[in-house]
Length: 279
Length: 245
Image 1: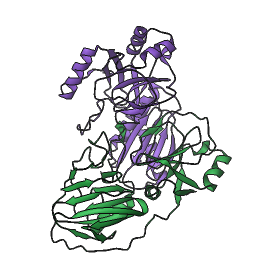
Image 2 (image 1 turned 135 degrees about the vertical axis):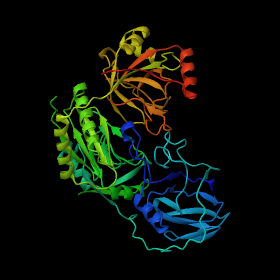
Image 3 (image 1 turned 180 degrees about the vertical axis):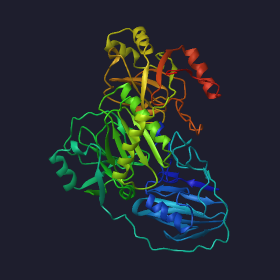
Image 4 (image 1 turned 90 degrees about the vertical axis):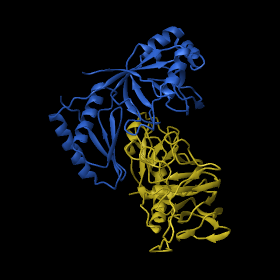
């Protein structure tokens, strides 16, 4: 078991998501920055869908109760194992009683802790991703224990890797959304010429942008939405749905992020700047 | 039956949006459901679909898709659908609602605004069959159509931060049930004790299907408590009849 001594800001178990239940309104959930999770799992020769912990900004303090191997990926958050500094993207041997704790956030917003064989919390509707009320709780709290399998004498093929990261990337690649044609020339110019900033309203469900563009009075029938869908409210607010985002919505879907750009956005926090580029 | 014209739009790297004529209509919904049945018959793995009123969102979770290829596949499927219409079992569900003031905190205000008595409001709300045009927004949230115009009332000007699970609300042309605690701006007139979403039921987390119908039944507080307990111990079975036998 991995015991949560302190959860930090927002700590969850995530795999790549809960697929096949969109028809009853269940969001995909899953890791926000899929790219970083895949890298962390790859290093441990895990399946890319093996469950990891998603750490948001302020890291947790965690204690292991049996031998295993871990890797850290995603945001750069200063981390220590029994008070000794450890690096992202290296395979780290863990012994019974070891304590992993996190400090200052240096780059990005969401970090990942992968473990050999993946975390073994209960699957609900085919996935371990925490999403309330599909799972009993929305996130991990003090004292929670997450099961994992013991691994001794693992010889990693690659023990450390230099990884190209996307934390400095400001440009989000977007496709035309289903209601793209509703945008006026003025709105189009605003969207693609200006720089935007992430507002305080940003979480696993959606990222709102601080700057408004010209509004609209178009009303439409509720229709499907996806992670990465950019909705435009009548007041001119752009809302980018993320992994826990609702499966349907009634605002025009003006743009759709590329899958890669969803991972880029997942590493942005309040005040970070963004630009859009149509592909 | 002849199919409606459809339009197929790209929706990012992994999805397409298929749209039927821009109307809320039972025959359009039936056409969408026929299309879905025909598509499922093709047994192409990896696709998931969700309906909302006049549209179908088709998502391929595995990988990027080629739009032209997908479009052709959909058009072929529509041709096939026209040839082989399948029987579909649909149900009318009777869902109990307690309209007591304890749950229906806005019912008096709604009755004043609509200028009908609370009794008349309950009578009208329970005397119609509502079509399920989609399930989305929250797990198990049904988009219901067919509200009588006399019950149309705008959303509350300020949404509540927390609307209790089971709350039955009215908002413009819609009525519906909040399947979980949620922020919300609908006018709350009662509460339904039935769980609309049960994640422990792997094969059928939501017993209602798009295309089914819902009718509400007014119950007392005592009956409400009873159904609630029955639900908790897993012996509550909502009343249903087959619609299109």
